Image 1 (cartoon, rainbow, N blue to C red):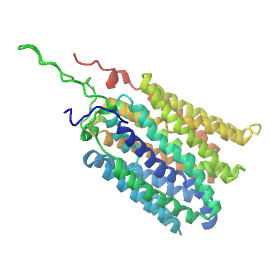
Image 2: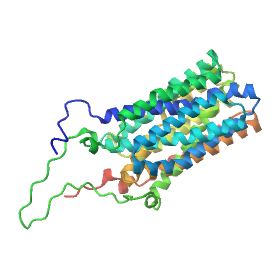
Image 3: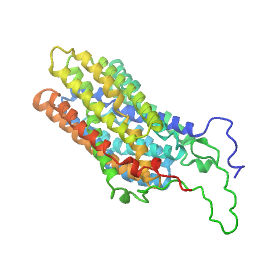
Length: 440
């Protein structure tokens, strides 16, 4: 064993896996979040209304959620590399095909179906399951870093897409983004992604392997290095969904998807309708995405050190609800400048947007184990995407009906407080492996 697990004199290989997962999220999720920058120019060219465009994004969220459990099941059996590389190829190719958009049905087929299925392969659910195998003590931190890749994609790619649209045109902008995904993402995933540290002779976190226990005297009980028990350890996803904690997390995840997808599609158009320049609106969205990186990484880091992941998860939902209240007030109170309201919202909501991902993924791993984690997380993520599907359509419909987004964003604000309560009432100390006594 010593020959296959040499002393660590350099950087732990798991950090290369982290960086690769971050960059894949940066490319694929950042490009998908840039869809909002394309809404206004496509509407202008094709004379579509907001509800029609919302269908493409909403259907994408739904199919991404429906296919995620199947991708998680495939991941648990064939490994991360095949699933993620196939996902990158589909996302990149469908992004290129967006340049040929000529009808709403084509947009729905390419963005709402093909690209959404590809995103299931590259999702934070799958890469988070991989990182949970590579890290144990720093699990919350690295899953937070992984989620921050998506946030950095919003920070950089969304304003970049808006700039490209103003510089060249929206069709060529889709081509540039698609080439970036294919040329940069596939080689990186092929070289650096690996499923399990044991296959490279390593242990989680890069820790040295514990020495084998001494042989006990004859007649004495055997000494083991058994890990703490997990009361709800699941061999398959069905076992997990027979217990209450996963339903609490899934309910909160439904609200999470409802209140984030709405922003991805409707934030930039809403800001433009309130008199904000399109590029400025994209920059504010980028600021919000950049703060996501800080919020996700910080939430993971602090939950590794200060116990009670469910408490931090509840705090995240509460903060996001408060952010929506600030946004609604800026839309209805004339004395509050809209630019100030948008920027304050960007700070408050930005810090809480992706912070749910590392907390939910880490809590799932610690309650249900790693055996079927990708499938369990995929089923939970289906609830997230169902929320996204319904909210994108609802926001588009309410905007057409009322002429603004006030009612849609008010509903989002109200929904987030029950999500916080659901997360807070999870019985983490009873079920999480972090709080179980280590066998003697």
